[in-house]
Length: 296
Image 1: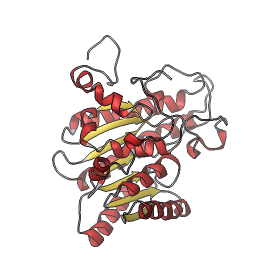
Image 2: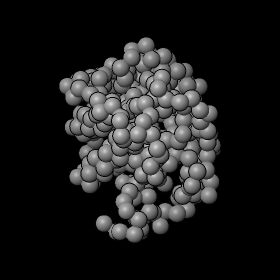
Image 3: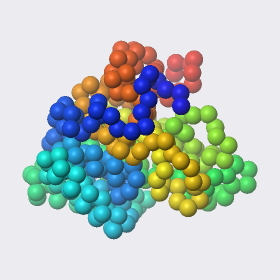
């Protein structure tokens, strides 16, 4: 794939390891909330934060059995790394704002009881879905709108529920798990997912401008086989593992990654190469969604 960095990864590597002292320090004391955290990429993100020693890691999803299985893995992996974070699971339908509000308030209460901490420092907005493939002409309009809702409304409800519970100025972090399809050239038959992810990205761009004290980063997690697309998605050999974006998300909390505020990045890109291009990222429109050649 084309890359912004010389280095391009399909698997985790030492520079993003949760065991790196500065990565662990960035996660320490933080309360993390992950939507869609019971399976796939969300599960890997939750495990990585547990490995890094976050104060608490809360996962939201629709299936209690998957949430409990993931919670057990989080606890096991955290123990292997010498940590014992508070692990919280909450069932929630992210399409229903009342359910999401109640779930996040419940997480806050549980964390407060166990650790005396009241802020939900980091939201990883990860929940979404990929529908069956098809062209614009002849596509099922209801499936198109359901796809839009599950990728846009779910994130809308999550950020609206989270902000009142987030910490004050310059301490809150939103990681938006997006897709390269939000900015890539059209791939025939993949319009519904691409459209929804593009709308999600524009919404998050507006959110970032409206809330400048919140550190926002949008992320292409890689090309990964997960349950995201359900039974309708074609089977293929994906090159990337869920652990790559999982550990990359923890790295995004570090001081060396702060220059990526309001940017779009790929988990595949080498973080040392990214840091080497820091000045370019800060002084140009690099990694900013828009029309090339038009600086607006």
